[in-house]
Length: 188
Image (cartoon, rainbow, N blue to C red):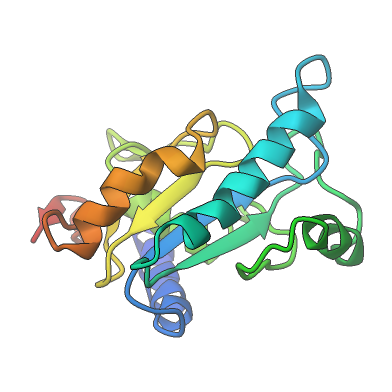
């Protein structure tokens, strides 16, 4: 557990610097452009819905002041294009306006600091002193304007269904949480 705490502290520094560039509310999502849950299911349709919904949230909520930060991931049946250029071309066909980062890992020893930070501070992915894995592409974290994790939403949650939570955060009716170095969750 000691190394997790050290990594979380480093991730906190990284994610705070990154998010401070983007505004008062943040939504972090792992994503894939080539597929859905598995090869037998609705791969392209699911991906299309998620990408459209992610961008749609920005356009349907005029008062929304935050940013969606999307991170492609190839850890789930490699359901992401091989190159960043292919990813860029795919999202361009939807007119996506949110930042799209390079391919990262969201689980395991090479978990990107943004996801390490978000998992560490969530109630959903920190269980009994152990960071849990994100189940599949399109896992989403919603952070408040103080960069506190409000909630993790599993891949099956449609982005448009977060509208009420976003409104509550914007109205300061609810806040996110941070975990202290002792692992105890601090709700402010």
